[in-house]
Image (tube, rainbow, N blue to C red; front, top):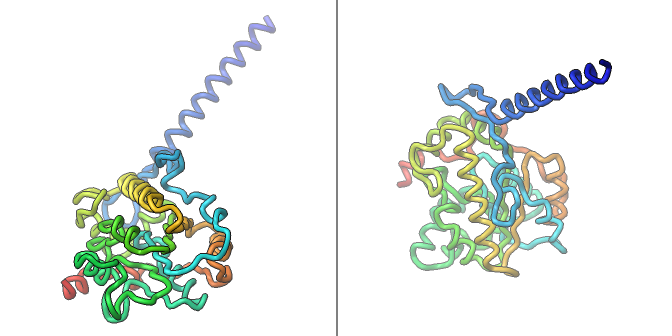
Length: 280
C-alpha cells in the first residue's frame, strides 16, 4: 500500500509540475499588454528565438566582437543602428573622447542626404565636399524612418568606406518599441514608410519589429564579413551596465564618457515629418 501511495503522489506532483512549466512558457511567449500608443498592442516574444547563419542570436550583440579587437579602433566610426537605439549616447561618447562627431547633421546638411547624393552620383559615400569629410564619428546617419540610408544603401556604405569601424547597437525589443511609441509618432512613421524588410502596414507590435531588426542584423553581419581585414564590426547592447567598459576596451576612450542621453519623452534625435517635408 505504501508503494502504491508513494507512486500515486509522485504522479500527481509530476502532472502539477508539467502544468506549471507549460503555463510559464505560455505566459513568457504571449504576454500581451497595452502601452501608451492608442490601441497598439505590445506582444512580448522570446528574443533569442531567431539566429543568424552562424547560429548566433540576431537580437543580441555577439560578445566576442569586442574581445577580438587587439588594439583601439580607428575612425571613421559609423553607427548602423536604428533611431532610439543609443545614437545620442554614441555621439556624446566620441565627442567626449576628442573625436569630431556628427549626429544626423553634417554641417548644414543631413548626413544621410550627403551619403545618398554621393552614392547616387557613383562616388564614395563619404566623398561629398564640406559635408561628410573628415568627421571621426557618424553617430546617426539616417533622416528618420523615411530615409534609413543604412538600410537602403548598406552594401554601398560597407563597400565604399574602406577601413571604417561599424557599430551596431542593440537593446531590448520591447523597450525599443515602447520608446518609439512614446516619441511623437515615430512608430507610426516606421509603419507607413515602406522600409526594406518592413513593408508599409507592418510594424504594429514587438514581434514584427523584432523580425525586421533581426533580418537587418543578419544583413549587416553578412555584408561586413564580405570584406575581411577591411572593417571591424562592434556590437553593443546600450542597456548593458558594462557597455561603457566595452566601449573603452574597443575604442580606447574612457568608460566615463558613456552615458545614456535623450531619455526624456521628447527630444530632437529623430527628424520631424514637417522638417523632412521642408527638405524634400
